[in-house]
Image (cartoon, rainbow, N blue to C red; front, side, top):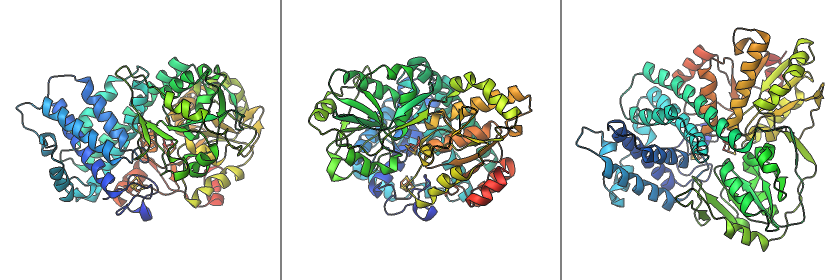
Length: 534
Ligand code: FS2
Ligand code: SF4
């Protein structure tokens, strides 16, 4: 195996025997093969005259399945490979195709032979700059696919995004120059922005605009179900099915922003948020006592104490944990989880009190006059975008320290699970505007962009780079990659990215990003505050 797609990759170089995330080498190899034939399937579709919706849905699911910490299940990935090959075999025409598009065998030993040849591995591309750019684009596509699928289950999709995913997957099989790949990288960012916009419409039109919310982080005495991941449709179905059952529902990690949507607030059995970011789940899931539903990443290999209570659905999967399938209409039956919850003890209280959130674009626009006035009279001197991901490595303490040491005239704009490093610090407010404004999930970084664009108008400046906004973004997996590419495609400069720069960026590709966008890593809290803020 070789995998270097996330921030925790071994020695910031690559996982080779087993993933730091827990992914086994046989699963990693199958994921590489799945991506390779997905590119082949895309090529078949692009060369045809059809517009087969099932093809793009399949490719989106395959991409999403290989995102960090989403699916560890060898047999599920094997099934997806076979289904993809079946689809290719039924759609292939009498045309000139690449080897990936021509792959037709479902004989597993032949698939293994292909994997063992190293020809579908990331390292099969020998030129490190081409490899770097192709992987950067592939990881951007994985993040985009996740957002596209969340929108699709709510009935929203963008033809442009779908077509881009198809054509780019097919293009990645071809030889490309560095210049071509650099421009494809920026195009990926623009399409990522569109995918986030589509998801924002899907979420807000279905569940209402997020509103300022005080989220309970304590517990009640009923047994509960804990829901993690990012899929709001799954959350809604479970909430609805559990409403008269006597079982309470809590969010975990990236599902916290469900608490900000008006439609979910109406459910009396929706209690609040339990715990913190994904990487604390081994302790928190144990203390929760009840069943857990993982709707997407990030899964940490579970402890035996709760493994039989961990359920997965959608693109997520873990061997030995029950998977909840959707029927042909997209409906999922969660009764087994609800029945199991009734037999469990109530959650152990690990925290008390509440946290504040719900500062997505529409809510912030309502506060716009107040915000603009505070900037004009100098009460707010800077906004710091600290969106992105959290992770388990000790050096992420940097973000807590950074937030604590920021001048009191600054406001943090956040989205994604990165927020858990500072959303319980009680940093106070400026003229009633909280100093940590949480827009929502990582995809709600879209809201942060909307806020920046509105400030460009309000202050009559030339671009987002002329605003009192600085960027200190934390990344972990591939959704953060598409958010970063979206920001670059909008011309945002001087982004600081940490806790380490991606291992998949070769020195030359890093130089291009520095030259074009002045992108940089982080150093230490004191120096970074000095450089960024003062
Ligand atoms: Fe956090 Fe994991 Fe949101 Fe990422 S829960 S690192 O999926 O996309 O963020
Ligand atoms: Fe390693 Fe990250 Fe890949 Fe997991 S996803 S195998 S931790 S690089």
